[in-house]
Length: 315
Image 1 (cartoon, one colour):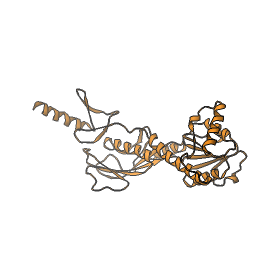
Image 2 (cartoon, helix red, strand yellow):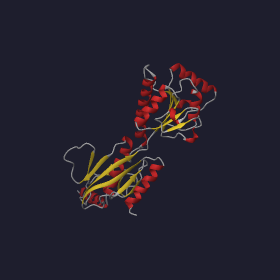
Image 3 (cartoon, helix red, strand yellow):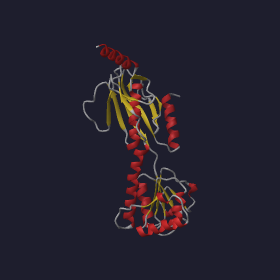
Image 4 (cartoon, helix red, strand yellow):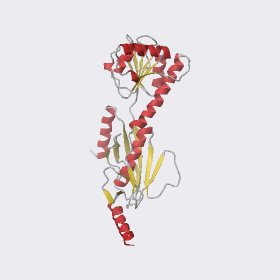
């Protein structure tokens, strides 16, 4: 089995486990380069790269662009070449390389983000609308209502007929809405608070929401700070309109959470000889000048810097 095939097998494992990652594929090269078309690598949110997409001149750039793609969810073509791109092209990110080989390559960055789940408790018009709109927006939809049958929610991917959510446990990629409209609001919220989810929204008036939270506080329920009034800024409207506003709120917050989850980009320094960006963490070629540390992309740049500094010192 080739390394590229192993990369794809590992990608399947990551997808099945619900993890976020990027598939980076070399699609074009102009020799000399150590990469070949079809070479692949995976990049995970912690910045680890597994596979092969070229040497040090391309690896750091690909890793950085992959982490950015995990944040915005957008694929892109990364061009690494010794000359600057003549013009901006949509969807293309160009980096100038000063690698001694003077080769160039194009790498396609493809972020793989698991489908988010939208869990809706209730069998009200708002709940039905949320399930329907959630499916349209690409969510895996889970309808929760005691005694429900599949036919009650024809557009839901899963139907749970009780408040025992262990059959499909909510997780960090599950966005939850309680749209029970006074029917078992408190019990539904308590069931959801047992799980770590990014969003628990209650569709209710401000007065009703305050009453629900007060009842739960009397029950000594933990984690009430995680519960919010869904679409709090929405003004009036029908249940269907409130459902739409709630889903818009979830989509917005999910986008923001992607950016935050991508983590901090690796710290980089500029090679003082060639101008390339060098990742500080784990850098091999460095030179200490008093309190200043210089970072280099290669031994060649480090040697050139030593010669240059030696000449300047003698002058």
